[in-house]
Image 1 (cartoon, rainbow, N blue to C red):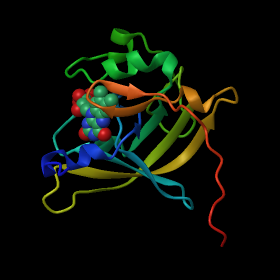
Image 2: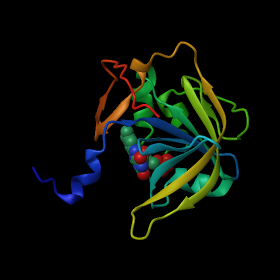
Image 3: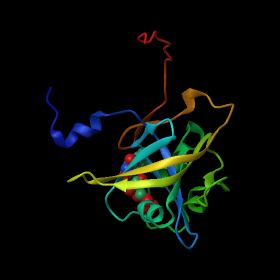
Image 4: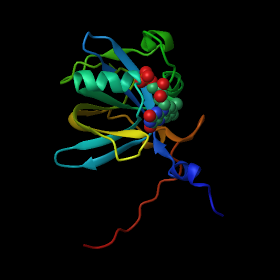
Length: 177
Ligand SMILES: Cc1cc2nc3c(=O)[nH]c(=O)nc-3n(C[C@H](O)[C@H](O)[C@H](O)COP(=O)(O)O)c2cc1C
């Protein structure tokens, strides 16, 4: 069945759900959920976010302070994370009951509940010709993982308000090098 091209990108799912925390040049912090988050380099460790090419608080903060934090969302705090999509709220952390902690190498806060945290310094912001999203490239400068994390807790975004948790695990033989 052909899918209209307006829906093509929605066929790339499920995607990791992350809460990106950031800070502006006068110290105001922010959080917003993202699911266009993709690794692009092991050495140095780098990832990209696809962020709509509009002046969202996240992109403004990243442009100002050149850093951000990727907090991987797990089942226990997913509803709070998703509510952070709300716009024009001064303090989404207080509004939705999220606790923050200090990061190691960036000024932006980390989410206390997050079991995987990737602190990033901005490498560059690109916009492919004609694209409606920026590619925000971050170099991971600190990575943390809670030892107790179960893979099945990690929330994946299907689209809209639909999410899924990883189900059956498979261990497959890979192609020999
Ligand atoms: C689950 C989920 C995933 C999202 N993923 C993205 C994404 O990958 N890219 C994007 O530009 N917006 C995404 N959004 C929308 C942003 O969260 C939204 O634009 C938000 O209002 C930005 O907030 P800010 O202005 O505080 O930065 C997503 C929203 C939800 C709920």
